[in-house]
Length: 237
Picture 1 (spheres, rainbow, N blue to C red):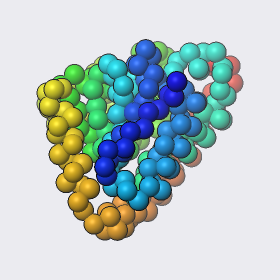
Picture 2 (picture 1 turned 30 degrees about the horizontal axis):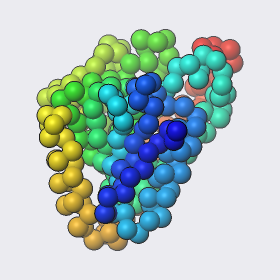
Picture 3 (picture 1 turned 90 degrees about the vertical axis):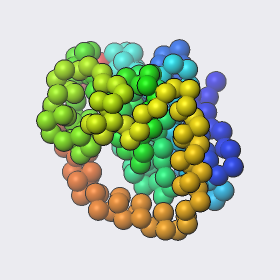
Picture 4 (picture 1 turned 135 degrees about the horizontal axis):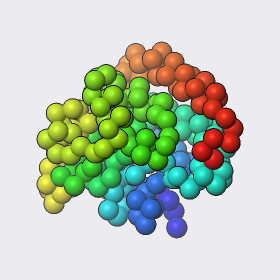
């Protein structure tokens, strides 16, 4: 079974996490498949818009904790894969819409924060909840601060709880919130509108966004790497 499903519908590519029995928790194989799926959608001139989604009950509950506990993938490899994946999302020259439902946490929230739009259903439970499993928050701190500001970032991480609905929209975690039954219709309408934009104008605009924020993003990733490097190698394997 592919851990990432890709379905093209006209000008829209739907890239979906596909570990529904694990709430789409992210593994090394899934990261690699996501990177490949994004590259293929970028290379396909027929694709004008990308929708990032999750199968089953949730968008993505975050990093697969068992992968960390069992040491299946070392920290340097995991960090390098996330860097490549996040670079792919940031450099994508096409609009990327995150379709949020169910759990949106940890690494799943980080990916959503790197998308251009986050359209959420009322079921979406959004949070940076690593403290609940005893993990530090490095990259997520910076991404949250950039979107919701410092005070809200500290609240989300220290409380390690979830926000929903109007509160998620007020904070900027969600661009829009709709009833779950209306979510796909609303995303289809947004995608159709974006697909009608001049692709070169969109590409140049998104390139400008990526270049403007590159110094901040590169510094953030380097700092996260340094902080992780200070941890005991056997800590939270």
